[in-house]
Each structure stands twice: as structure tokens, then as C-alpha cells.
Image 1 (spheres, rainbow, N blue to C red):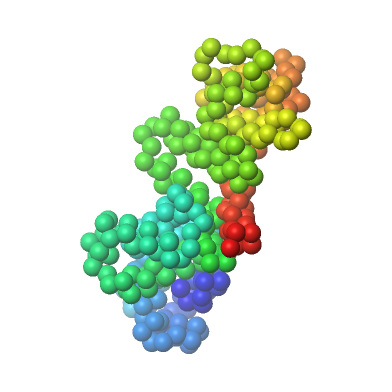
Image 2: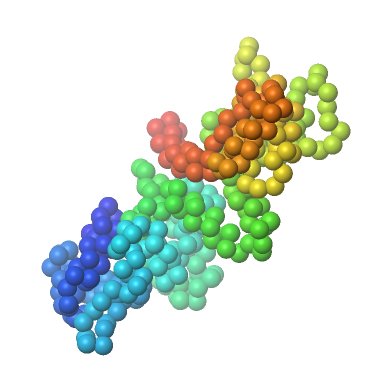
Length: 328
């Protein structure tokens, strides 16, 4: 992008605004790009060809002048990096692959991220399989810089990790493949569970996905014969302080009564019972607990899906910081 990583998106909006406000032909736009951003002629032409016309944001009108397309106008008016990412991702080989690699294992250094990316696209793209190593590195660097400019990926020290928008993109693309509401809820549910485990592990809890209710109850308490499960359990033994536990339920859809019942079974043995849900279901749960005078009322804490995404993003940054400061 013209303007570098830090100003990439702002520069893109500046270009779209210029095209929208002036009647210029293609060569005049290239000349303006060259002058405005101090670019070489070939670089300015590439920006115009690949990032403006090639992504379908600018087109040449029948009178020879260039105009914004509907999509280009939408990006300019709404000024949301995610909209530009949606235009870029299908156009260029290897953009979503970077997001998926980081989503599976982050943070990663430039070298490790490139190695995984190159291996992946070499098997999925005939074009990329023919790239020489030097050209592949150049293409990778461009894509990674775009993702940083669009607030999808961030860099701290020499490592890269997904920002909240990147994590949400990975989830949304999987949701588009879901066959029906039930499968979509399962994907969303599992995504939050994975993030809860990530956060718990970072704070040095024994973090257990789908923990049995009996695992949160002491051996001296009555045990269930059926396999009832919590979505996630954080546990830690504190010297001279006993066992510290936090129970989590992800309420995307499904049976609210069942979620309440499982949390009530462990309420006496956990510090907090945390429910990740939306505002509507939060009020339903509060009403039911109040009506039945449930002891869970004193332990329950509500968080939103967005809260978990924000904390997961922060944890990824802290993992880099911790590694650099304390382990290198």
C-alpha cells in the first residue's frame, strides 16, 4: 500500500477521495500517486493496476475518466478497514492463509509464519508453487503489511498475532460453511471455548474444555453418575489456600435451564460462575435466578462475546511480551 503500514488504510481512503472528487483519466491518477506518495513510476502503476482497478474499487467510465465503483464508494463513506479487507482477500492468493495460520498457532515470528505460509500456498496454488523463494518472500511481505494496515494482524517485537478483527474474520469464514443454525452455533460455541482455554492457560490455570461437573466438586460432595459437563473450567491449587476454580458456560443458543442447572451444581465450589452470552439471554438468566432465589446469584458474572475477543487479543500481545522479557 502507498504510505506504508501505519498509514496504509488512511492513504487508501485519500486515494479514493481524490478519485471521487476529480475527473482524471488513468494516466493522471498514476501521475498523482507518484507525486503524492513519492513513488517510482512502476510502483505507482502497480498500485493503480492491482490495488485500485484490480480490486474493483475504481473503473474507467465510457468518457475515459475514472470513477469509484459502488464498492469503492462504500469503503470511502464507511471508512472501515474490514470492508477493504473483504475486497482484497478474494483477489490475492495467500491473504486468508496468513489469518488461518495465526489463528491456529500464535504468536509467530516472521520466519516461522513465512515458512508455514509458503508450505501451505505451494500446495493450494499452482501459481504460488512456481514462485522462487525471493519472490515468495516479497509477496508474503506485501500481504502481511496489508493485513497490518487493515488492523487484522499486529506486530510486537519480532512476532505477529491476530487482532480482534482477524480472529472474528477466521470465525466468520467458518460460519459461512455451516450447514444450518445448529452447526453455526456449534462453531461459535467452540470458538469461544478455545479462547477461554487460551486465556486460562496464559494465567497459569489448569484450563479444561468440557470439564465434567464432578471435576469441580470435591470428593466429599455427592457425585453425579451421569456425564454432565461445563464448557470450561479453570482450576489452580494455592498453597495453604486450597483450590481456586472458575466455571464457564458459553450460552450462544440451546437450553438456558440446562446451563443454569450445571452451574448451580458447582456454585458452592467455585469463586465465580461466568456466563458468556448476549444481552437478551443475560436478562432471561437473571430473571430465572431471581425467581428461584438461586444461590448462583452471588457467584454469577456475565461477559459478552466481544469481551472474550478483546481479552484474547490482549493475551496474544502479552504472550509476546512475556516471551521476550522473561524467557529470552
